[in-house]
Every structure is written in structure tokens, then in C-alpha cells.
Image (cartoon, rainbow, N blue to C red; front, side):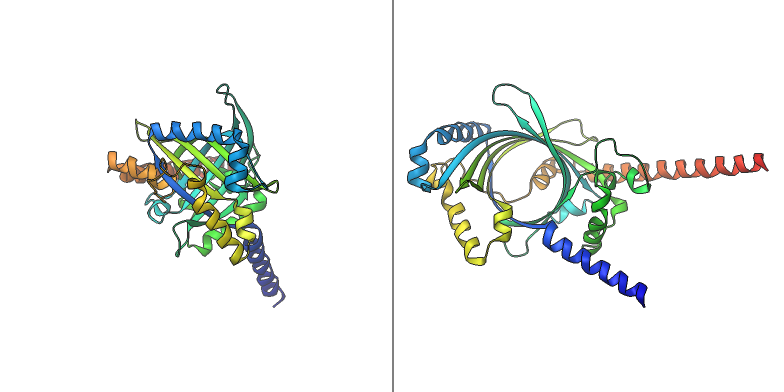
Length: 315
């Protein structure tokens, strides 16, 4: 009885932690851009960041903007049937770097693990769960530390991962690295009363898959409300933020450039192009997964074999 009570209390604790700390709602508009449009957007960002009169007149006296360049390296995981891709979900390890407008230098900022799922009601809204990443060169303490995905997650956050995967009926043992995406992100941060409020991001995206010889390139503009503020906001506050977001491109004279709205996640956009170019890619991923498990089986067999051999010689 006591054991069952402890187990129930632990699950309740996980549930509360899962809901209060891990889950965030993000609201973002996404637009596909040509190379020419991307260049125009970036130049406009630079103009806006220097135009205090425009910010005051169009946004308000309590708003300010700043310009930043960042580089993201994302590693996406899925199973051999591309379950996440087919359901517009995303599971990734993200390494974030601060870029430079002067050269190609990059300064490491942080590494995070993110799991995203779509909203059933609104294409603009997705829900995100963030987990701490395992430290670089972490010691191997268990089987999980050798798993392609779980080894990326800190030990303290793995119980949350298991809880969430169980909720969505995801088998963690099937997960393999599928896609690498590099994003050069030129961003216009908008603050209200010195608090981050909204971000405009012009992305130059490069996608790579180990089993494909060619890379995929695309460009995108994102208009995103600060996810922490949006998650914590009341319904009326959310409506106010959404109204501001919907009018932002017109206020900053970007509406004519960003007109091709496409709410698909980047993982889906890049994978769509890979699969269009190579329809047999899914089969290749399946074969690679089978080879991976075959390798693990051989290693386990050899460990058992040499253990029994050593034991026999010792006896």
C-alpha cells in the first residue's frame, strides 16, 4: 500500500513538474523566402534597428529593438517510420552560437533538448517541452548514456522525458538521428518596457542527411511572440499579443516581402524536399536502423561470449 502511494505521489510530482516547468506555448507566423527576399528582409532589419522614429511612431514609446546574429545546429531524431515527421512533431538537440556580422566567428551559448507538438486548434500555435542537455563528455553510467538520443539528455531530466514519451506512446528505444539542420539566424528582437516581447527572425537553412549526397537549402521568416510571456499570459493578454503580431509586418513595411505563409515546421519542410528528391529515403533509414540494432546485438553477443569463456577458463 505504501509502495503504491509513493509511486502515485511520484507520478503526481512528475505531472506537476511536467506541466508547470516543461510545457510552453509558442505562437509564430512562418513565411517562405527566396534568396532575394531574405537579403531584402535582413537589410530592412538593419534599417529598422537604427530608425528610432519608426519604432516610436509605429510600435510605441515603450518599445525598443536590437539586432542579433545567431547560428543554430540542430540534430533531429525520429524512428525508422518517420513518426514525428508524419505527425508534424519535432525532437531535436540544439546547439546555439552567437554569430558575428563582421566575420564567420561563432561563440557557443548553450545546448538544449526540445520536443515540439502541433496544436489541434491553431496552425500558429505549437507546444514545446525543453530539457537540459547532458554535459559535454559526460561519463557513461548506464545503458541510457549510450543511446543515440537519451545520451543527449541530462540524467536529471530523463524521468520527464520518459513520462512525456509514455503520454504520447513513443518508444524511446526506436529513436535514431535522422536530420541535421544548420540555421544562420539574423534576428530583430523587440522589447516592451525592456522585457523581450517579440522576435523577427530571417533564417538561412541548410539540411543534411547522412544517406543523401546533396544538401537542402531554404529561407524563412519567423514572427514569434516571446514564448514565456505568451505561455503565462491571460486569454485577453494573448489576444492583444496576437493582434500586435499580426500587424507587425505591415507596421515595419515588411508585408510585401513576406507574403508566402507556410506554417510547416522546418523539420517537415526540409524532409519534404529530401523525400521529393529521393522517395526511397525512408527505406534507407529503415535499413540503417536495422543495421544499428544488428551491431548492438553483435556487441552484446561478444560480451556474453567472452564472459562465459573467461569464466570457464577461470573454473
